[in-house]
Structure formats: C-alpha cells, structure tokens
Length: 251
Image 1 (cartoon, one colour):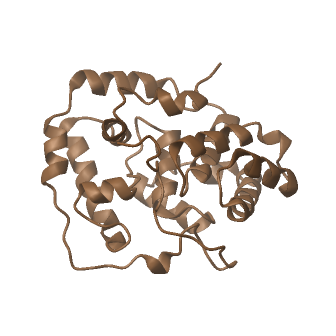
Image 2: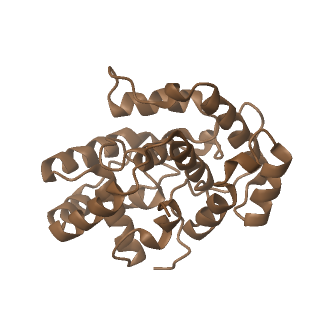
C-alpha cells in the first residue's frame, strides 16, 4: 500500500466553495444508492484483533490525550489540516500551524503558512480555520461534550456549528480529543470500502456503518478509535501510529 494514501477525508475533486458551502467537499455529490453494507470483512477484522496490539495502541494514545485548552485547539487544527490530503501533507500543514499564536486573527499569515506547508485548499482552510478559531476562543466550553449528550449527538451538534468539517472530520477531531472514550467513527473512504461501499455514492449509510462499528467495539471491549487506528495501520503496514502522530507528542 502506498504511503501517500489519504488519511481522513472525503475523496472527491474540489472547487472553491461559495459562502453557503458547509464543507471542503460538496455535500451534493454524496449520492445514496440502494446498496447495503457488507459486514463480513469488518467482523473478521474484529475477530482477529490482537490483545497486544490493542494494549500498545491504548498505551500510546493515552499519553496523547490533550489536557490544556492549547492542546485541544491544536487537535482541531490537525483535523482541519486532514481534509482531502495525504497523511504526510496533513502533518506538514499541522506543523506549520501548531504555533497558532503566530497566525491567530491574522488571515494573511495563516494563508502564508498554509501555502508554505503545501497542504492545499488554501482559501478554504484559511476561511474555515479563521472562523473556527474565533468561535473556539470566544466560547471554548461550547466545544465540550455536555452531560446530557451521547457522543453521536455531541458530534452532530458540532457539525451544525462548524464550517468546513462535516461528520467525518468532526468525528476525527473528537477521536483526537478523547482517543479512549469517543464513541463516534470517522468514516473515511477506506472504511466505506471496508464495508463494501463507495463513499461518494453511499454517504447516507454513514450512521448505519458507524452504529455497527461501535457495537463491534463494545462487544470486543476496545475503544472505537483504537480499533480504527489498528485498521489504518494495517493499511499502512505500520505497527503503531507514531509515524504520523509524533507531531502530537509532548516534548
């Protein structure tokens, strides 16, 4: 498998959006066909999960759970940089922006850093990150999970409020924020394929396959993001996530 495989995004070509667009990706391109998900490959994956792999991934991600407001904001920045790009470019974009004090409230500097990183979609990322950063620091508590919310309703509330991420990438941010607790599912193009679906045609199956994935995780007592990380690392032929997540590690 090529190391330039996309990480977490929706794989369709893009044009610059209008201000009415709510995502990097044009939602109108996501058609729904009558095809049903295939669960066999996914259930075979869970049946074959190795306890050592689960434990090593849990140990690694437990050390990366953000504890400060600064770290939490950076996880959102990473999610914005993950849209429609390779994991290598995702890391480069994040590293260009992680010192956010240098570009906060300065769209020109934000754009310059994005362009220098080569992450792509510069106009969209600048506009969406600029808007999000203002929202976040104006009211950071609004991005926390409420006591009366489950994770899916929490995610869906944020999808309605955040310009540019939509369901998959908002889920990815929540996975990074709570890697051992988040009960949502970043259904990227690879996971749709895992369920025998084409993301561009079967996007409305999202919550159906998410529900199945979360049920499997409960059955096997493994956090959803840990299982997803193991699956992603199988695709990349890597034992752990440190080949990309090193940029989130504390000094």
